[in-house]
Amino acid sequence: MNESSWGTPPGSGQWGPPDHGPAASLRGAAPPVPAGPVHDGGGATQTRPMPLVPEPGGHQDDHRDIRDISDDRGAARLSGPLFRDDRPQEPMPTSLPGSDSDPVKPQKKSAGRNLRAAIGVGVGLGVVILASLFVYKPVFIGVIALAVVVGLWELTSRLAERKDIRVPMVPLALGGTAMVVAGYVRGAEGAWVAMALTALAVLVWRMTEAPQNYLRDVTAAIFAAFYVPFLATFVALMLAAEDDGPQRVLTFLLLTVVSDTGAYAVGWRFGRKKLAPRISPGKTREGLVGAVLFAMVAGALCMQFLIKGGIWWQGLLLGLAVAVSATLGDLGESMIKRDLGIKDMGTLLPGHGGIMDRLDSLLPTAPVVWLLFVIFVGSG
Image 1: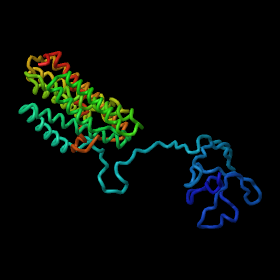
Image 2 (image 1 turned 60 degrees about the vertical axis):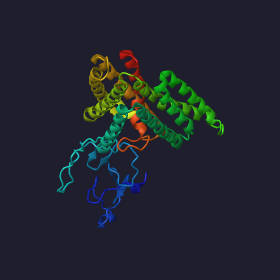
Image 3 (image 1 turned 90 degrees about the vertical axis):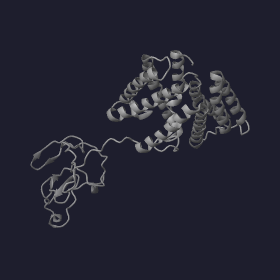
């Protein structure tokens, strides 16, 4: 330990009796306080304790206890950690001392995104979807195919940027479009055949490049083909119902949006307990309850008034299933984005992120809703 690291601050007094040596006559500078016994004047030995508070620049990692400190007035014994502070902590002031400024007010909880831009983009997308859905069905199939291609481009671009995974985009885009069209025209069988052909095309296309990382690239490509276009094909299957195809698709979209809105609103206002903090810290259990309640009410209304042959209690089950699948889908993409180290898949939609950031809850919900429609009211 350095002796120069310890001393009595000027003007703060001394722990032992005053010095009688020649250094005491000097004014303007405090003499250093030795850390051990010192001889004062006629040879009497005095012991000065070391100060309990180290000066700046000292060895502040030396947490040794002080034992058997004594002075000429008697023996005293101190023990305890060197840097212990037994004084109670005073509350932090809400304003700076001597300042005329107002006390610091607690910050309001932020919604976390640009709500004005998000609402504007959402309304615009809703108009396009409704117009294409109820005016001419093939136009809506084109909307689905376009969303699939853009979603594939976002996903493959992020894989290349963050993981150096080279996914062949051409066979994925062509195969994804073929899946959506085949599902609408030929049903589930056509969608499965298109999926198989897309996987085969990816395997062959990747053979034209170097064999290094072949397995990794084709595995990622087949995952992308299943995750985006194949799951989106179930929307085309719902639309293919002759009696109420557009109403089924509208119900599917409304329930997913209502579930997401309920989770967002309730979680932002009342959320306390984290749902999956390691995956998505912003999601709460209270938000999941809000998603379930909102979706069940909307499901009962939609099944009763939109779906031919539907009953309100079926809508309750449908809403519950949508809330669960939409939440799992959102968490699934959050896992992908955390693995890639990104916040959003893209920036195409202001206030929302990319197309994939809007499809995350829709894609896994589509087969669930299609299956429940088949069970409750048939394939149409």
